[in-house]
Image 1 (cartoon, each protein chain N blue to C red):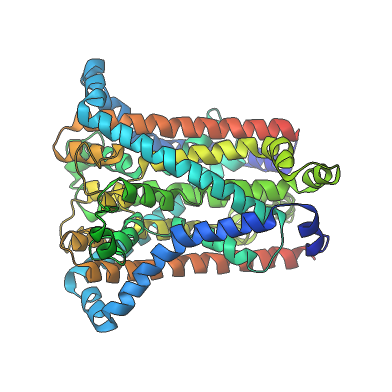
Image 2: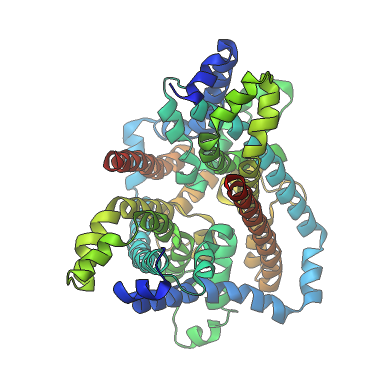
Length: 278
Length: 281
């Protein structure tokens, strides 16, 4: 029996169980209820209403746009995440700490500011605004702006997941592969990738969940044109502001399912890594 | 990483392509767009920026944002401490479920959290209707903003505290007990100093995140100018009036505030690392 267990057992039962009950009550009040409310509200007019709400034309085009944006943003950030993790976890060089800090910047920036910066670069009054207008290219208040804002907001996820993992694993297996004559690509495919696949998967899942659900940044650059530049969260906002609550929650329930899947995968990943470790 | 740097770079391939690509992509996606805000601010000139920032409506929005973030971060620390403590130190049925649920606010899109919290705390909502008789109004008041920011901030506090509580040296606690210390003394003199840096980190992360938070707040806050309007919302209001300079001024103020918070976190973490390192030697 370890020391923690001995200390816990030495505490009066009443104290222990009141802390546990309080912790469970707080978790239910602050975390479980908001999640549960989404699903209960989504189905309060029954399955057929839910199905109608998520398959209606504007909802469908919002879902399609969100999937498109995610399909562009996630691969871009996966390639970056791999390159950045390889650079930072496998080499020592001047400016390594700076690079590591810079990767985190998007996490520290308000979503609204993340959207604003792209308006300032590409908007009508922005740096490239006049040049783009002459060539009739629209970035802000159109799909490219939504993609850019999403890429910015989800930028650190994959790198953040891979860097500590690859640092912990060390480089000896990769060095052995190279010493035995493998090419860089062979080493990556047969040694690096199998070692990091779970971490990479989780990074991709986090990146996907955020890309589908990003609201503030996308709201600034989207222009809210129904059927054209509306993503899933923006569609939820419109429905909600029109007092169409059940439909808003029905569409929101799709994003909540993604959130729950994300958590499930995280648990699975922890379990997998523990299994490998033991 | 004990061998000299040149040797590492010698054996493993791909340093230059990976390094150049990372830096290029980082520059294009993050650094150049972000520098647009600061350049815009510089060209607009400080007097004009200052006029925007010091206007009553903006000052009121900053007060709401700072006040609500501060209150929510403090509440998150208290609530998060209880939850983290129970998860780490005790065994109870459903413990791993509680542990998994802590990440919900990270994973749930902010707009979804926003409409859900508003529905719960509206005067006729599941929670709002119990608070109404006591004269407590949550939705569409500053308290609503605080509730939304507690939801957002909780996982930061809990995930900062957990590893430190796990690592806390229980033998030292036992030694303190066996030397006759009371439970409260052990907590105050042995445990609390060890977890203080993590509490501060969690607080600062929750606070910084709260300052910039938008999606979960705009629905529950009601967005009354001078009363429940937050700074990020004002950026959007300025943009809708094509007041780019005004939006930029608020954004720069917010960026500086959150960078200062993150700098503070790094200093706290650096100091605690030094503390443990010197403690070990």
